[in-house]
Amino acid sequence: MLSIDRAGTYQLGDRNVRRLGYGAMQLAGPGVFGAPRNPEAAQAVLRDAISLGVNHIDTSDFYGPHTTNQLIRAALQPYASDLVLVTKVGARRDAQGAWLPAFSREELRQAVQDNLRHLGLDVLEVVNLRSMLDVHGPAEGSLEAPLTALAELRDEGLIRHIGLSNVTMRQVKDARRIMPIACVQNMYNLVHRNDDAMIDMLARDGIPYVPFFPLGGFSPLQSDALSAVAADLDATPMQVAIAWLLQRSPNVLLIPGTSSTAHLRENLAAAALRLPDEIVERLEKIGNGAGNS
Image 1 (cartoon, rainbow, N blue to C red):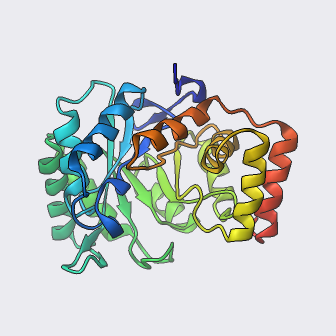
Image 2: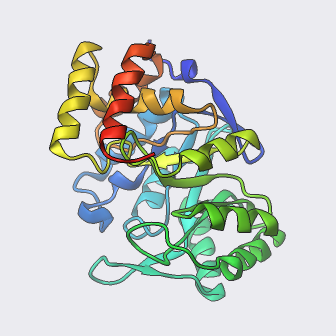
Image 3: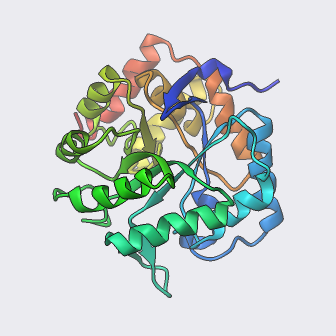
């Protein structure tokens, strides 16, 4: 019987979630734009995730837009009492699917209302502010104005907790001077290790770190190195990448995404994979070879 309990749990906001969750982004159409080819299959993946113990789903109303939230509502409502839905605001899509900033007070309020409506909720458990100062990655700049706008919505009872996404260490520190931060969601994996210090800082304070793209940024050579380790463990490269992240720090919560029930089960099976010290050393060399610290 597949179980993700072996990965343990961690507090997210006021809730305790299993460390292996699910990211809904891949349920939208190509380029995270439009509807999936098979909405029924997408809903089946969501239902399977819940049946396998997932109680943390990451989504956003700008996936599609609206698509993943509508799929989640159709597949899972009424929601399980322990399910935590985490969404993101701060971006919008144009008619061609481009990603554009949406940081104004009015845009953030509309985004929260859209998420509530499409998910069928009265309050959002956690809303991450996605920094769009640079679409391609974290960039320095003040987030005080959009965070203040989200704090107003929290005070109105529409949001319980606020997190950050695509942010720098300085922005995290500045935000924490303004308000409690529920989590940080950034790109991080074996090769892309720029947030090592951030993860350790957040762990000391009991704040979850949610990495995305666990295999993102790999070159073919680096993928070959990871594949060799996976073959030795009779596992998939994704399973090894997930297992390494779970062992990296107890405050790491994972949201691997897929539109396939078979891949979903493979990903969640990584909860049972324990990496010996010598395997961890081999994996660390992959990251070191990429020049990340």
